[in-house]
Amino acid sequence: MNSPKHVAIIMDGNGRWGIKKKKSRNYGHKKGLETVEKIISAAIDKKINYLTLFVFSTENWKRPVKEINYLLKLLDNYINKEINNLIKRNIKIKVIGNINPFPKILKKKIRNVETVTKHNKRIQINMALNYGSRQEIISAIKNIKKKSETVNVNNINKNLYTSGIPEPDILIRTGNTNRISNFLIWQLIYTEIFFEKKMWPDFNKQDFCRIIDNFGRIRRNFGGLNE
Picture (tube, helix red, strand yellow):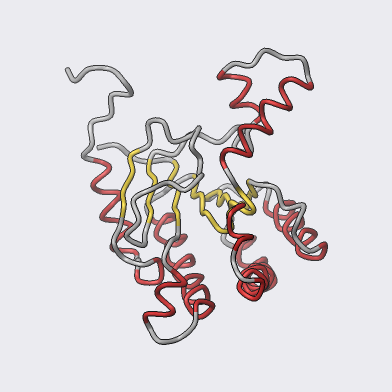
């Protein structure tokens, strides 16, 4: 059976879940954070090496200011609360994306959690923050040209936010939406994609493990032929 090294997740449906529960979109985001913790534990149990979470996209700036502020505050609080646990649990945090537009204090906390966990080995959590795949590719090509290097697949890979990280074996998207929404479009060329009807706050360890087990039964040819 195939054992995935890298799982990427588009954690969709938090806001809609909150409204469906006759609460608020922000309530849905808060409950979604609880699901993040459950899935990190499940990924560790399944010995996943890399878990990439689409936390905040470049398109999320289009949302109401109150919701944006709540999302950034939720991230700030998570770092404050969990930084010691991340160290104890041997979890490495890596940010992919451009966090320059974030508040100064939050940027400092994000960089600090990357620094204090950089030697941890149990699992690497890639947090996609202000991430957009088209922007990532454009940035990579600009960097290559600035260095007067040849634009080719190898050099693009080296200049992406995900440099040094293997391409995802699995992409999971919750929320009953079947698209990838400007997420890792370069990296997903041979990724197995699982679209889930459940909203992210309802997604659980059993769902995650079912997908990992289903992946294990897939024959992956990477453009070749079945024997």
